[in-house]
Length: 399
Image 1 (tube, rainbow, N blue to C red):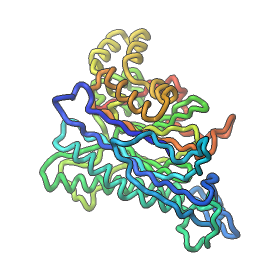
Image 2 (image 1 turned 180 degrees about the vertical axis):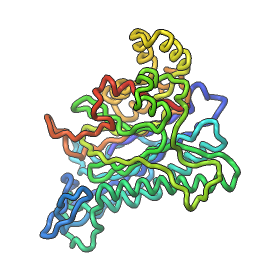
Image 3 (image 1 turned 135 degrees about the vertical axis):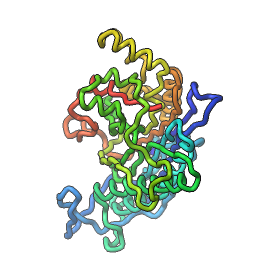
Image 4 (image 1 turned 90 degrees about the vertical axis):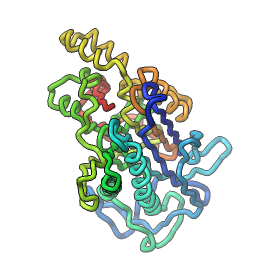
């Protein structure tokens, strides 16, 4: 599994602020016998029912023995790939992991504390779930162990629920902190479990996740912002170009934390969750809104666009000055490595103004099945009915 993280305070805040973002990546690598043979599915005389009501077979096999679990150091990402068989015949490992990106809300007293609490608590709660999920599917190593000593393979809804519960636990701890310190402490979050070839994830606020597929050269947005501007786009009150530069782009409708007036043991937050299948040619990107909302001239551009009666020429200029989904896709496709891509994302955001803190996390797994050459590709876009030209301009912003 290859991975990289990068983060920066942003040019506009450099020397006069702090980085309120936090990133966390926990990777579980597993090797046994001659290496990982590929994804397995349970098979036996008995059957289990999946969350979707379909029947799945159950096997009598268990996981391999050589394991290593570690927290990826934010400053030592090295774009390492321990999952792909190289030209020297290195055995292939199986990978599972947990990712978290949190963006402390600007303008509040303790956004950096909120994002730190979130990345640590979510990772702490979900890492065992990811490892247990991997252990449920042992056939990839051709090891036979009685099924009754293995955990039951979790379904998609069970894993999505685990993600939502971990995010809610972070929400409660932030509120507890706000109660004890008398501060306002908020953060957004996008987080998930990667296991058995699927990404089970959830989000609150306007931090985002994407998947870029190099075989088909496409980008799929996986999240929809919880933001005022997003709601206006959804209801056709403003067009997608206005959303790039709207003055209300810093107003989010959901966040973790609060001002300390809630009971931390009972507090809840709305977490949206989804599951998507991944392929060997996929790169997952999680990012704070600092990558998207980099443009410092947004208010002037908005006024010019409205005053021009939404002229196409002004719309095109706005697209050229903000970071679009097409550009995000191209950075991933053109980069020589994930480290190179993460560095380019920070440079790109700063080149466009560096208005906010910038954090990116990328990972890919060559041990997955290849992308189908034609047909058979599951819908992964959060808005599958939009064509790519429309979708790439729906950029929600937060400062």
